[in-house]
Image 1 (cartoon, rainbow, N blue to C red):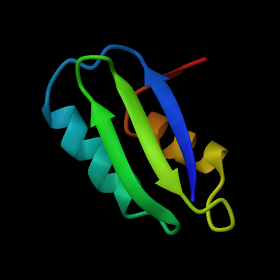
Image 2 (cartoon, rainbow, N blue to C red):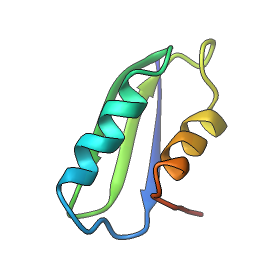
Image 3 (cartoon, rainbow, N blue to C red):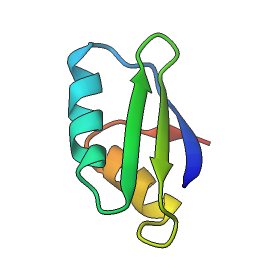
Image 4 (cartoon, rainbow, N blue to C red):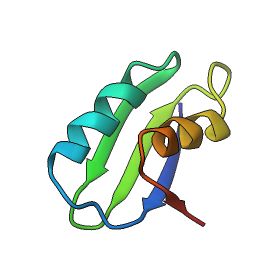
Length: 69
């Protein structure tokens, strides 16, 4: 398993957590997703043979949560 962390723009509501964790958590190759509301960070444990970091980032951004470089 590989771990990647994304810094998001500030999250505005706790329901954002469920939205991100639910969608990313259903992706093939994703073992665990943890969203930290106070710091607006997303930690993903994933199998790099099944999913690429760019795909994870894309799904998060399509949900409406920009990833900060």
